[in-house]
Length: 67
Image (cartoon, rainbow, N blue to C red; front, top):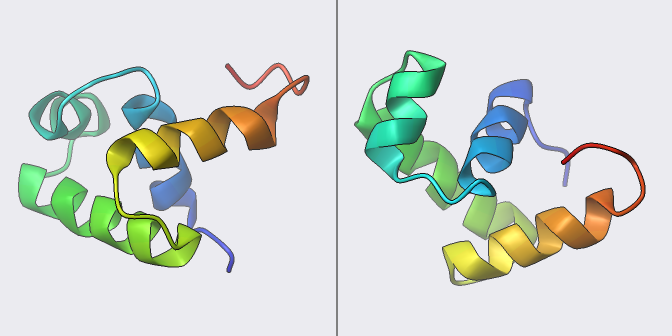
């Protein structure tokens, strides 16, 4: 399933190990919105944890210079 641009941004910052509050601050959105995006990412990637999301992010971006 395709991620929105904002979901991609949230995932990128999440992969840096930042909390929802820090993600919200960096992206200038509320931490409630971050929580909703993280929930959507978990559902779309069919995983149950933030750690699994980060693992998928790094696997999908290996060699692309994204991180």
